[in-house]
Image 1 (cartoon, rainbow, N blue to C red):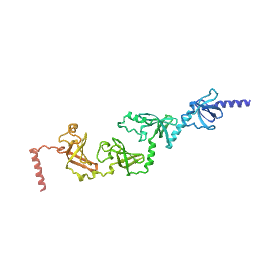
Image 2: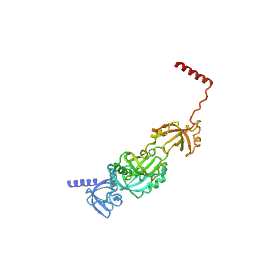
Image 3: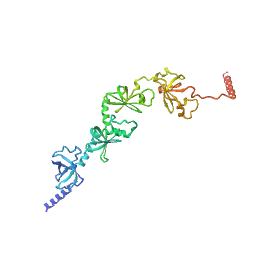
Image 4: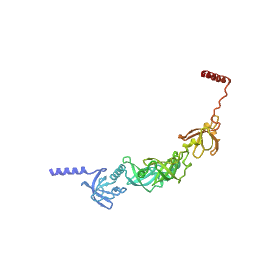
Length: 388
């Protein structure tokens, strides 16, 4: 009776310990044959992994050997051979996500494949997972510098990368949200930082203009480095666009004025003596000069006095009369016109010089009446009496 009870308890324990569908189990590989992997699950039952459940998209299980401990998920209680059907897919997928999280923590650089492109960025395949890399995370060399931000042209640029392998860092890995984000820029920044250690603020570099934008010019120099010259750092004069001074391919010398992580800021004008330091030696307030109109703005005329000094004739200093419609007044002038101006102000530190057309901007006072003359004469007499 005792033996019967013991056997019954064992049988009950056996069935209680049999894994159910969806359970994650651990076991030892006992055979690998014809694309089927058999696993001894804790000495209770034999499970088999085959077909798509081998999770061949990942390298996770490509090198397993007999005797290896593995994890798998139960997908069927019993197949036609009386074996439990197992899958490496769920367990492997989890391990791949864990590895991606580890890459973030350790800052690991990995190789991934570009599988598709859209207007927002690139679809990336890494191991068995698909992720996304926004345009903003591209290596600056690969960034689509498209005039006007035309999305169709940006897409055409991004399609060139489909099928290529690139080095990236994982910057977001959220398995619950199935959100995987990559960055090529962070790899570039890391490489840039290592190279930048040999440069310092104030250094002069030789480079080549690689791109022009409304806000400045990009210069390539050194070992694959690229820096930005803001429009205000190109020349001492005010310009509307860098293309007025530079063109792509120009060889230039520039000074490093800031190093912010991997971002490099350069200046062209700081290698040239500031002409405004000597402006008072060349010009004086009240002086009448000839200038050439080189730009017409809604607020007035930008006037070139010489190649280095430019001034502004404000719209209020272009006419003796109050301006009704500025557009009508400005329409009288043409870029390239040479005219005579009077210098009315100079601020060398601010690089400002004010001009006016002769006779403009003066208020014509009404002639004094007889009564006003008498009052003025009386005040003068009283003033004389006080002095005596």
